[in-house]
Amino acid sequence: MISGILNIYKEVGMTSHDVVAGVRRILHEKRVGHAGTLDPAAEGVLPVCVGHATRVVEYLSDSRKIYCADLVLGIETDTYDREGIIQAIGEVSDYSLAELERVLSKFRGAIMQVPPLYSAIKVAGQPLYKAARAGKGADIELVPRPVEIYESRITLWESPWLRLWVECGKGTYIRSLVYDIGKELGCGAYMQHLVRVQSGGFHIKDAITLSELAARAKEGSLEEVLMHADHAIGTFPAIIVDPYTAEKIRQGRNLPLEEDMPPAQWKVNTKANAAMLHRRVYTDEGDFLALLEREGQEWHPSKVFI
Image (tube, rainbow, N blue to C red; front, side, top):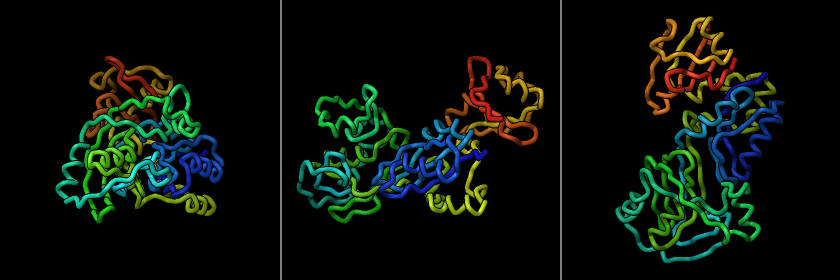
């Protein structure tokens, strides 16, 4: 059985679901899921989990993302990108880099963002884009959501073209960021192109296309591109347990906090806030056994892999 995480390069024109379907077809594995949807017009890193690794998709989705976005100032579209219908045309002033930077600085840190109407967010069980295409968009109230933009910087300004490098958290819509920047400038803007450069620990330089994956599968070299499930949660502290404790974990039994646990080797990493609430568990043979989640004064085996 195949299990692990693939760093797939999603090409322009494909949906994220197309990628999942392609991986299923190539690997003959039904359990496949992606972490973090990319629009069909966007390209770049799309982590795809296969087999048992589908159980860590949520942790991949929570990771930081890095994007390179090309904006065109002076035009607004209904989808906020090049796929949409033009809604408004504005005059693009001779903005200085300092003026652009002042506007960009308003959209850093913890902000409230209104998602685009043409998005996969569900309202009353239906994706927003379906309601929009059915002409019911005016009946939907778009509710602002909290998102985090850790860093953004201008890498190119050749009016009306503006290129941004953005590092952000889960749930951030770069299209909405582009739209909001255009509104703040007073001329409007739409997203011409978007590349996801990185998602968590997965970088574009290491990504492979579906064609490359098919070639790997044919030649029997999948192990070179299939990463272990624990790659998704590598920032959580890890413990190595003895066989007795490993069996308790397999049985789903809670364990006391680490100060009362049987002797084990600790590898502590506190980079992530969630690290205080989770532990990776390995057997004394080095196999990734489980993920523990803190419940009061105990550790609960929330996911057991072997």
